[in-house]
Amino acid sequence: MTNFNQDAFNQFVLDNDVVGIKEKPFTLKSKRTSHWYVNWRKPSSDMKSLWEMTAFVKNFVKDQGLNPDCFYGVPEGATPLGIVTQLRWVNEERNITQGGYVLPMGRGKPKEHGDPANKYFVNAPEGEVAVLEDVTTTGGSLLNTIANLQELDGVKVIAAIGLNNRMEVTPIEIKDKSETYEAFREIFERATNSPYTNQGTMSVQQAVEAAGVPYFALSTATELLPLVVAREKTDSTLVKAIETEFRTFGVEPLTLGGE
Image (cartoon, rainbow, N blue to C red):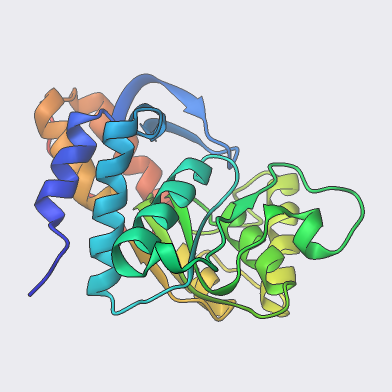
């Protein structure tokens, strides 16, 4: 018996306008341009919606057979999700009245000095940790968080979980801006202790798993974009522009409908 309902989660995403399409291309955090966005700010800023999100996460995690001691949200976008999910998990799956459970919270900007528990965290996670991210594009923020957690004594990252995976490859030297590529290379090598020899075929899942952490996503671009295109009756010109994005940076090509 499964706990997580994929169709219900996809509908939640649509109802909260998390995924949408813009006529004018804009620049993502990864410095790539795109005609479509994933923005969790609306449901994350409303307690009722955020509580619903944590239920989806909890059920998804249970279906994967995971039993973390801590949920930790990638600063700062996933911080509210991490905090509320941890509260719900400890209250419903553990025994919060026994005490001894930490409420992890990271710093948006690391302190210049200090031990890792104080440098990167307001409250450092403990034990087996599931890292939560709202949306993964190239995976740089997620890998950086994993690298920070790896510096903590007594912590093991057992999973990295994204609410949405944009299904893009990690930075490519011949296609991405040089500073973007170099910044990601540094993060990747810190998290994995391996050289970054990307040739345009590494997915976020592959990059995270190279750091020894299983990666999961509650939804993907390839699942959600066709639903958005159908709902909004997206113009064929925009559809072709998005399909071109996937041919350039996608893990795999994507064919959409459109008017």
